[in-house]
Image (cartoon, rainbow, N blue to C red):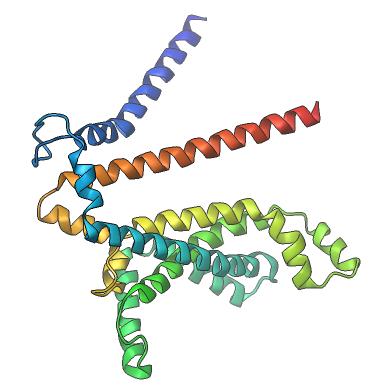
Amino acid sequence: MNNRLKKMSFSTIMLWAGMFFLYAPMFILVIYSFNESKLVTVWGGFSPKWYGELFRDEQILDAVWTSLKVAFFASTMAVILGTMAAFVMTRFARGWGKMTLSNMITAPLVMPEVITGLSLLLLFVHMADLFGWPAERGMLTVWIAHSTFCAAYVAVVVASRLRELDMSIEEAAQDLGATPLKTFFYITVPMISPALIAGWLLSFSLSLDDLVIASFASGPGATTLPMVVFSSVRMGVSPKINALATLIILIVSLIAFISWYMARRADKRSRMASD
């Protein structure tokens, strides 16, 4: 009994230590977002003025809007490409073609972002020389670049789900007269929808957070939020960045809480239905 209490106390200590290590920096950042001083490391009194300065900064607001648009379209395209790649990886017969495709899809997962960004930059430059497109790098090239590396993450997530499916359900649908395409959209897609949602959210987070690849693929007319934050940090951290980070933490926390609450309600309903 004493050993069990010791283990519980040790686990509790490690839990709180891990929580403190993860969330103490965020807590300090939130506090200093209300710092009146221009120096982020010197407390000058409580003031919310930097939130007003943030919403008056057109450069940051434009970068936020650009990042959200790129992340939305890139994650959507990544889900489409990643799902097709995952379907090939799991449903086609074994062979050198399938093995080569699987290796090529998973390569961006371990490839350094600098190499990925540089290769995409060279691709866009050579395409512009040969075909005249893209005429200049901007939001479109960033969208293509993010869709490329996010599709690899979606393919891994969706492929793991496809391997767990019972193919007899799809075979039964085809025996009843459904075409393969109709079977995919009416049978397979609903069953893998949790993986599709997870892949979309993962791609959205990766695209919103990316700095290296966007720096290579973007042009003067398309500056994402990480690029603006990085450039401002190099010139000196502004308290407006603390306010922006606090708002992002608040939004992410609200989304996480709503997701947890909805999952809890769904679990309760399923338990009541089973009883």
